[in-house]
Length: 195
Ligand code: MN
Image (cartoon, rainbow, N blue to C red; front, side, top):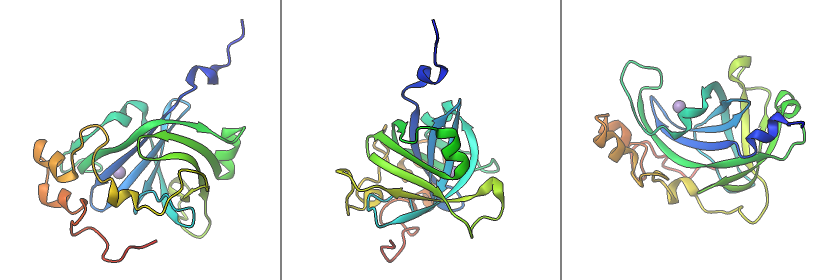
């Protein structure tokens, strides 16, 4: 009996962790070949297909990290408060995902609680001269899940605990004042609704 190894992993994990570190960002993660491919998205995802969100590729993470929510202690890499903002599964739309990754344009479908439907990550030139930290753009495709709704502002809470960043910091001994800057109305919010 022949087994296609990739079929053992028909529903790889998708996760977004909202992370108030030195700067607020959203860590966008896709499980692939035993790790979480990761991108830091400073403004978070947008459901508007006209909006392109900068996504800096970061180091792969262990798959188990996709369930983490809590506080990373001061002095450690990524110190700050982490919220599990969205969780689900994803499927490549590209027939050959490895080639697509190498070529810097991956199309995929998300089955999350907040993000769904068809998306693309495309690597850009001109940003991020360091190849280990390349710049990509995260863009929603036009489909029934596209929307003008500002998802990061409308749905700011944890998908697993319903907590805001400040709640997580308070519960777990983190920096509440810093964490609250990442919550709606916090000082970290941009005054203008940037597209
Ligand atoms: Mn991060």
